[in-house]
Length: 302
Image 1 (cartoon, helix red, strand yellow):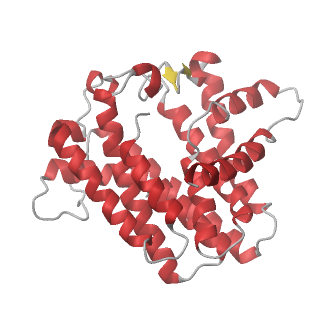
Image 2 (cartoon, rainbow, N blue to C red):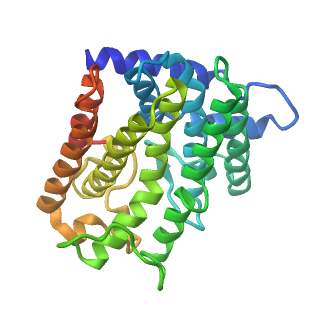
């Protein structure tokens, strides 16, 4: 049932994305670069979450597809820029040459730049949604991707943690300041966009405030667990399956959850995130897909 549902969402999402940026224009090389990265594969976790939460809260999940795909455009832009020589300087993404290696650095920057406004165009043109829903969706995506969201997390990542004088939110007993800084960075860089995807599904369904809260808890825990698992895979995964060089974080001198917690500690932390995520949505009828998704993300190998 899980695989069938995931594939149903994925078919709609991929079909929608395949229809984008096909205009034959003098600047078609730009569109080629945009499509190259956008259609390079991946789990499409974020738009799948948008569809799943729209369905969980009683909406027509098809209405969430343009919203989730808008967020996927922004996610793709962030990956293009993250791979650039001025950032992580990665040569491969999902087993393929990164955008700046396939094309060139200038075109990669511009492809990322172009994907951002195109995302908001998708929201503005999303069918079967009210003007208020579209405005709410714009706010969710802007907040998730902006200076207090994903970009802020990217800044903290380049700085190696929270800036001096920045108060780290959510510090609890038993968590070191180094781990708290890393959690803060992940909550912004990874978690904000995953939470935004869930909230876009809520908007498409016209969900209640309580539903938004449950979706936010689920997505926040899923995002943190996702990043911790990613740090583990940077150590234990097979490079061909993982899609990028193993050990790249260590080679770049980044501190990861594995450095702080060790592999066993990371495994326990992922399990705890998964339990909290599942607890947030378990009371809802029809939450089986999201429960299974949390379990599978905790065990993924790529």
